[in-house]
Length: 562
Ligand code: URP
Ligand code: ZN
Ligand code: ZN
Image 1 (cartoon, rainbow, N blue to C red):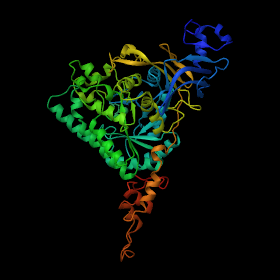
Image 2: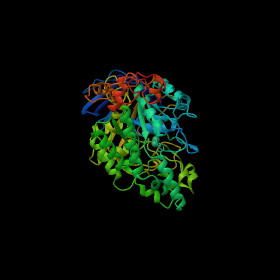
Image 3: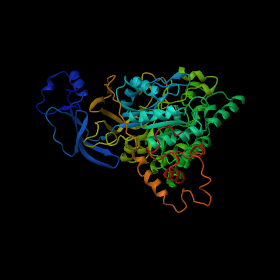
Image 4: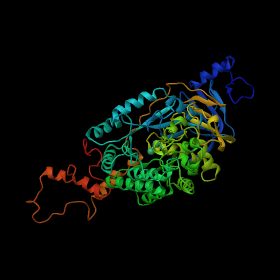
């Protein structure tokens, strides 16, 4: 309470509002105004230092030692606490129709839970409607209007054609600068290699980041059939049908296809050591590939899928699956070493009655687990408390890297003057237990982190300068979230044009060698195009041979390049 003696809330001198009732005053403060976070340890991805943070009207206006409290501001004492940028979760599925049902958390319940767990911004995956990506975008904007936190959107591409290619350009103009391609979920979301290539090429052209769900969907379907006919119908069939080899194969294939068209690539939910190795090898060869870990991959074990209780086992079903011994350790080592860049959630919640659809056939268990509220705490536990990462590394893995890769940095992902006031206070001394009882989504009746004890707790969350989580109380308002547009040509695109330009100067580069009799044998333009030369530009052919790809030079091929 505001006026309680010993409370961490203290009004600045002369503040007459102290006479107003505590509840009303707290609501006022929750609406914004001026807030000074005093005496904490400020942590950015590159620096940790003792400083105060001054916030006005939703924006950070100063980060410096010993800031004097302006008249009328609210002071939040932060001695002993880490003051960090709010978490950014670049991989969520709120209100998503999937496998015959809809994910349980909508934008309001999911975002409210996120704020209680210290996440202040997320990027959700919009799905097309009947392969129409613009209709999907409109639908997701309508779903998100109930939210209470800033968000952005990726768009999934599930079929290729001239309309999709054109609509991708339109969506980029509207602030959607990343597209996801599923290499799994055969017959539903899965794209062919040809479609993936076309999509990667279009992304390269638009400056949009392509994302892949990397599993070999054809092989998964084949494995599923085999398991079912051998009598394995329970949740254990899920990991058995999706072994690490199928994740690694698709990861390697996507990396190579992206290399051929010269596009950067973001691999979502890397779950196996084998997939990590593919990414590591590619990065060491100069590929622009980044890998996303998800918090379930850090902390959970596949053995739970063999639990004799169906509800407990089915709760763990997600794709790619939670893996066996050793994989989590390799993923954490890869995060510590910079082979993987960040930790997301893939938050896709289905309650136990939804999961029961697959009671007698694991192929029907809706795939997905929770994590939007638990991610910050589990990552702190698994990386920082475990001694694998510093607090600055933690900020990079849970916030800054996502802001940079998805081109909203430093507006998000940094505590600095001019950034949005998305701020958390983490108390490293508090130990607490995760589970349904402790979580803030009313939609979950199981929690894959049930009973997990973690050290370090987010005690305060500010969302654009509004105090939304403090002293165990959540104060969120439906409809207060904002859509954050993300411009194309983010950092992963820098230098790609130069790489292509240099390829032109190679002594044995992709330029036609003049030979006697060539003039007479010139192919008609139409025939050249059928044989795969898009527009015939010398630069484009050069780019392809240099790993830059046919039809890929930015801005040079507006329209149908599929
Ligand atoms: O199991 C999962 N991951 N469900 C959500 C959809 C996806 O593949 O990301
Ligand atoms: Zn996926
Ligand atoms: Zn996902």
